[in-house]
Each structure stands twice: as C-alpha cells, then as structure tokens.
Length: 447
Image: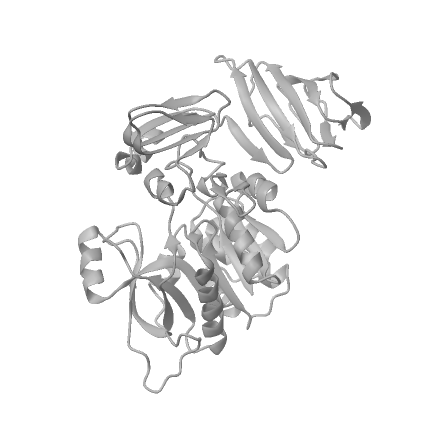
C-alpha cells in the first residue's frame, strides 16, 4: 500500500501545548499498550505498521514540522516530502504525488491512499483503507472517498451523497459497500449541512484514493511538469486551495465506501478530553469537588485543581489555559491575539525549551536535550555568541572543523560566525546561553 499522510495545522486550538511548529498531532497525550505516552501521529503510524507492515509511507508537510516528524516518526519506510511554502492540501498532495513518481519510481497505475496523520481511529479504519485500495485497483472511478455518518450538522467537514449501487454490481470490497457519489460539497453552513444530512449525506473523512497517474493528470492542468524537483521549483504557481475544492468537488467519476467504525477528528480540547485515557496527565492533583475535569501539565511545578466542574486546565511552556469545556472549542481567536515566541520545540536531534528570555532580545537561556546518536546541523549565527554547559551525557562538538570531546561539566564558548555542530554519543542535556545584539530564530545559516 502506498500512503500519503497529511501533516499540517496551525497549532492554535490546543494551546498552550500546541503552537506553530508543534501541532496537535505531536502532543504525547495517549497511552499505548506498554503504558508509554505517544502522540496522535505516533499512534496512527504504529497502527498502520500493524495493519500494513510493508506499506510505503510518505508524510506531506511543511518545513516548520519537518524536525518534529523526524524526531517522532523518522525511520525505515517513512519518507518526508516538504512543501517550500504553505499552499493548502491540493498543492501538498500534488507535490507528494510527484515525489512518489520521480523520486520513488512508483508507476502511474499504482493506487495511492491519502489520509490525515491525526485521526483517532480503531483497527476497523485500516480494514476500510484496504477496501478503499481495492476499489481504486478496480478502476471504475477516478477518485474513491471514505465517509462516516454525521452525528450533528457541522460546518467543519465536507459532505457527499452516496448513490445506489449499480445494478448487478458485486462491489469491490468485502462489505460490498462501494457506491457512486452523486455530489460533494466542502464545508457548507450548518443549515446546509442539516439539509444534506436529511438527504443521507456522509461526512468526508479526509481519505482519498486514486491511481497515481490520475493525480499527475490533474497536476498537468496547472503545471506542464510532473517530476518532484520541477514541481517543487514552481510550487508557488499552484493554486492555494484544498484538495476538496480543487479535485473532489469537480470530479464526476467518484465512488465511496461507508465507514461505520471508530473515527474522531480530535481538534479541540473538548474532543480531546473524550479520548484521553485518564483525566489528569503530568504533575496534576485533582482535589475535592472536581467533576468532569481534564487537566494536562507539561511543567515540572505541580498543578492543583479544586472544586472545578466541566473544565479544561492545561499548563505548558507557552502558557496556561483554564476554560469551560464548551468554551474551549472557541479558543483560536484569543490565541491569534497572543504574540510570543515558541518556548518548546522538538528537533530531529532532540528538543529545546526556553528557560529565560531577555525582553530586549539580547539574551536567552535554553535547555537542550539531545538524544543518543543525535546530531545538529553544521551551522552558525552571525549576531550572537553561545555558551554551552554540559549537564549530563557525552558527545563531541565540532567548531570550525576542530572536534572537542564533551562530558558533564564541560563549558564551550561559540563566538558569532563560528560554524559548529554537536553529536551526542549518549543522551545529553545542556544549558545554552545566547548573548548578542539580536537573539532571534532567524539568525542561523546552515552548511
């Protein structure tokens, strides 16, 4: 099976734990069978590997999420296709299709399944993906969708109306539920959605199946190229629109399968609380009188909640949220008004957390956690010096081509302009102090 997983999102609706580089799919809030916490993205990939051990997985994302993806999901059988700029899901899927064709050598007649990286689903979801792939191989439709029965009229989803099965059709899957699609409508008003539901319309699960050549043909309508490097170079020429508007609403040869298993779009604190394995995560004490309260604490300081009812409480490096559960769904406009730097970020080599920041922008103190075997890029900063103090672990720093061993207690000064990198032989923790006339994220040059 050839899968494209879409990883995007602005990270606003699960603030303060999520941010622009740490969207909801990377929050480690779910316990696996071993009792370890994992993110939605890790959970889905683990489930995929159990269902389809030999599947080829390509993650379509932006540069701002690449480090977190490599940190959590990097490994054999997983490729990352980064768009050069945000242009919505149609360009991202088109670029990933070009990547499969020219970089991975996938044939144009091969089925491709596109799905989000963050749905909360059970095993039957993957059985449905197998049925969807079988329908694509049959080739009676150019595009195959997966739909779920709506539970309420929402303006957040697309809707499509399944038609009757063709006379005498045996169906392309074990359930025999393949149907033509009469029409597709993306994100209608709630009033329109209610009318669609009355007609028997389904929610679009954000899962699409097609043969690779089909989408390359759609791409050719916008750009006369189909190799990854050419599409990447001319990416800004593609329309900034969703796959739903650009393809699903316009295509007439569309079929669908109905999915009736567990499927949740966990996009708000309220919906997240419904699938959390326990009401309190982290250093949390729920005191007397608490009813229907969920609390998450990523800080080392204890969080005590008492006498609260129907509440969400979340504390993280970026801030603290205390909200009524219903109101937590309307957090985005308030977060849009907050202007602050990202205080925690996962990198391909580990993670960093801001401990102290000078409001004048002249200094910042950061805690670095580098995984065993992790290596930073070879880079420099023009406007700041850095001082590393090793707290634990062992590794090697390379500064202007010269290697220096590092152990607990070691202090290393990195002057502005000096090219440097760090490679950890064991897991390491460091304190990094940045000092300069302009301490900012943009001041980095990689080699």
